[in-house]
Image 1: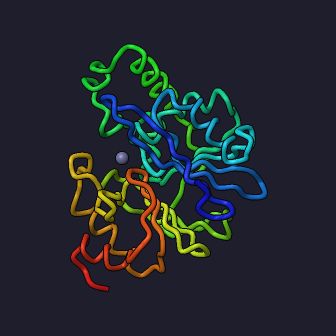
Image 2: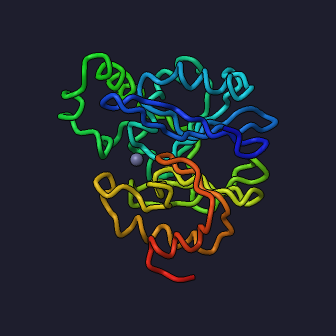
Length: 242
Ligand SMILES: [Zn+2]
């Protein structure tokens, strides 16, 4: 679904226990090419390409991938994407770089989890982990910097869910690409998923900075688009009035 002229909600569907679950990656189209924000699970390359084409673009034009954080449902297709697009740039927050380059183990991917996966998925996950090598990240991002995409794409460090989690703010569109810092649950904006958020206090503090921004719409990786009283919803989640 197109959210603005240049930003598409790239809906990636996975069947979990027979129930479809949708991840909301995003695709930004700029003059110098396409930017993918997050990349689904291992094995999802085909679907990513299909969705890019359905949005009217060519997968060959993907120039860079920004990962909001290290979780396997966000970086899953990395190995496949690198094979498909050898020159693609990889951008993550500085605090997430050691995980993307294999210096530190992914926080939520213990060896037991890998062992418990079905063979096919485990092979893909192993291939993904093998792609996390020194030099993998081509650009390290810092809080507050602005990428020259979509008229200015602001990097917001929103740690808690992971140490280097980022959300992306497009001031020109009053749009927030929240990653996993926020979710939409039963139509309401909610904080990050507690079982998957090692530092919930920090995650909630990370949201306080959003009160200062003009936001009309939030795209959450889990739950999709929220349109409504974002400021009021954030107050409820953080308990802080702006
Ligand atoms: Zn996550």
